[in-house]
View 1 (cartoon, rainbow, N blue to C red):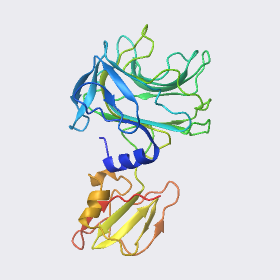
View 2: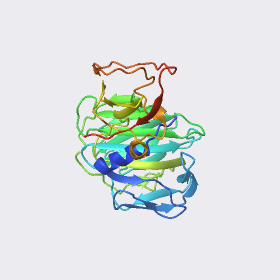
View 3: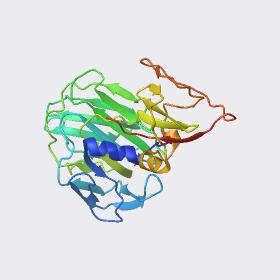
View 4: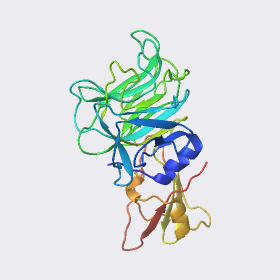
Length: 307
């Protein structure tokens, strides 16, 4: 299940966004809603978007791809997030999802592909023979369902500096480190759906939507929220629950800051009879609270962005 909060995505884009491709056009170029990049399509069809709205890109595995006019993926800290659907495991060659490099020996850049043994790979080329900066691989869930993929890298060689998430944005599938920093821009302009080298293009057969690229390691889960219960407003800020002063959770505030689904906030699985107190959770601790609905009701959950 994909948990998505468009307001939080916009917040992240406003702060750290490099490029944002929603793929909603009925045809033609892929438009960047954040920057000034542009993707020229070839052989691409449009299909229904990942959430049943708008459009997505359908790649036919034979000759379809998108070629951008810039390299797009930044040096330093980087996050790449997209929605993807792939019906079956590749049988003739790997499926290249995105790349701004080709050869690990001759190029710099980042690649992502699906392997013939069913894995999703993120790989960094460092222009060295038989070497790479990072090489992450995890099983990919094939079938007629969309999946949410997030790759983050702090751009350094720090332990734990690289993370890969699929669907579960609370716990990464993989945590690793790179042996080479992300300090050199990619050798080629960004390409979706195939390798930039036409001799072995490795065309992708599947669907792609909502590609987001950031120049920072993003936190996929909002950690700050307002909770309204019995006409009192409680805040949750990085594990601290307290009763602020006279905040108001009126309808406009909910529209401005609210989540479209309460389940999208996984930190609080159960709410409870909150009292006027503050509790700090230690590292690795979880919070669980129950609600006696016979005594009170939870009116709404509101997301508030804070620095």
